[in-house]
Structures are given as C-alpha cells and as structure tokens.
Amino acid sequence: MIICVDFDGTLCEHRFPEIGKPYTWIIEKLKARKQLGDKLILWTCRNGKPLEEAVTWCKQFGLEFDAVNDDLPEIKKNFIFKSKKVYGDVYLDDRNITMENL
Image 1 (cartoon, rainbow, N blue to C red):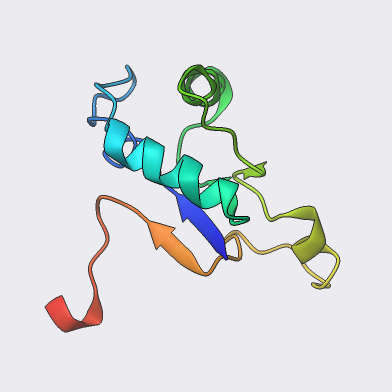
Image 2: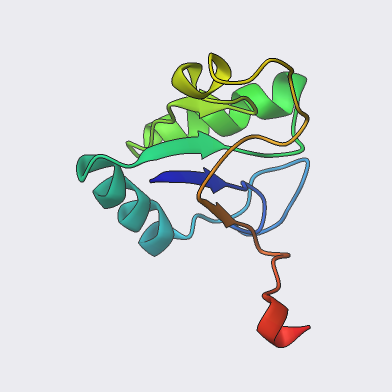
C-alpha cells in the first residue's frame, strides 16, 4: 500500500510556517505500517526550507519517507507524463472529507 501523508495538521498541530506539537500516535502508526512493507510519501504544500525542516523533524521521530512531494520511483516508470498529484492508495490529510460526509 502507498500512503500519502500531509504534514501540517496531520503529523503535527497546524502552526505553519513553524512546526506544531507532534501527533505521536499517528507517527507511530505510520512507522508500524512502514515496518509491514507499506510505502510512505510525504505530500505537503511546504517547499524550500520549511519542507527541509519538516523532513528533518520527521526523521527525529524515526519517520522516514520513501518519497517527498513526488511519486515513488517504481510508479514513475509506469507513467508517460508527470502529474501534479502523486499516486497513492490512501491520502491522509486533516482537510480530508469522505463522500459519505459530503
């Protein structure tokens, strides 16, 4: 499974451009999923220095991603064009809504 994860409001409290308090239970759950073989993509609007800070912050909690704001290498080779949306099976985001709740 490929899990795309937002940063602000999902892995930590939303305090952009700063980094809020961690949601450790989510971080631990994602680390466990990675141990089971799932792939993780950090999918965030952050870029430049704020993105670097977010990646470093995640590593401090032992959360490492297979890709950051990009498709996995094995997915890239299957597409003839680059989309702005990364390919994933699940997208975790604090602003997510399901069709049932629309």
